[in-house]
Image (tube, rainbow, N blue to C red; front, side, top):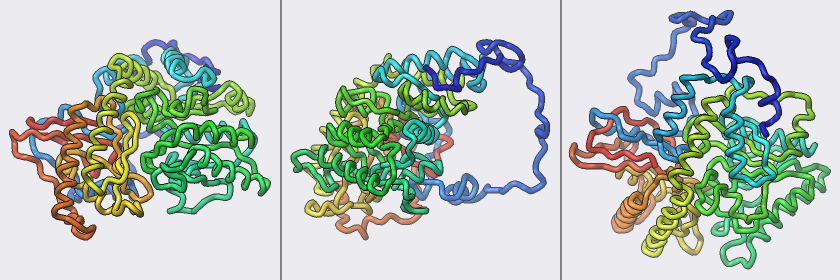
Length: 520
């Protein structure tokens, strides 16, 4: 079933043709629309000649995230075989089947979702086959942030409550409503709102209940129960508990098995719903299951699931899946839900193609196999290098926690930053996460191979060995500012591996013919 408003109206496609056919070749200008060549009187800003980082900050929006202080600039005349990308490209950047699906549908029709089209129905059906039967209503959107914002609206309408419980250091999106429920963001801005309540991150390496605790799942769930009770004592009511099924920004955390069912029981007893954020971890990444929340047990079913990033392999598409009961409560407002390009024919064609690739290339099983191998290799490095305090992960969602001291587990923030920069010199792009920015995050596209894993870990080993031999303190780990990355000589093959979702200051416009460039 589609979310109310996605299929309620049945107008014809623009130009009077049916929605399944080709649209009109020409559309007239709307009132006030500029003709080609018309501009505002004020001159445009000219960013030419500036260094990339400063120009990006000035022209692409001050405050945008950038992982490195200098752009990656290899030399050469040919474009890369595959363009570097972040964690949003689950099946590999520019996968030909996904590109073809978008191109073919764009040639036929791409219009807003008021017009009926088979793709949105077909896509909803395919998604429903991957989820528990209870989750059978789908709302389509353009981004993970939009999905989580809608999930918040659904939860409040269904419960009639307002307050939200979230995990510490969580991040759920960039909209104002989501900044408010993201401790990772709001602590640096306006602070915590009175309707937002923070529970401890279920981190068994750094949290209050660690690997030696007899039942960390129950212990951490009891913390949520305590938060809920405190809210109720103040006369407030819980609408929802929001959590990434595997907290990523929090440091690649793997919640102990049984934690979510316990939390859901406490939250539902208080009249709230459980929202599972699968935006970074869904679609087979964990290997064992298609959805990360399924790691918590076959009987656990969230009330709302949000999807993004991997769902479209880089195309802007997202989804909210929920129950009939929640959807009916939302419909009862009488206010139709509408999203112009959420669920457009092209977006749904892309989504269907991604599901086809995941199935045909058996990428879920591949993620389980390669992820297990990667964890084994990293475990060997942990035994060899004292700076590695913890290796945690499942499938192709892996974190390497770097520490200064095994007893205190002090985050090795400077060392992690230095290591990431050194890896960049070896054409491997990683990012760090966690409260201490000391956890290396591995979230490559699911085409990441056994050979790729060996290559990355070998480079990691070499750099850590060099660090241990030559650089004993944080002060010696500091790079020269704005140090540029030079490309190898022609004929010397370099492998670029992009792991996780780093924000690069700039990407190359050309790469030498001898480069193998993989978007991982």
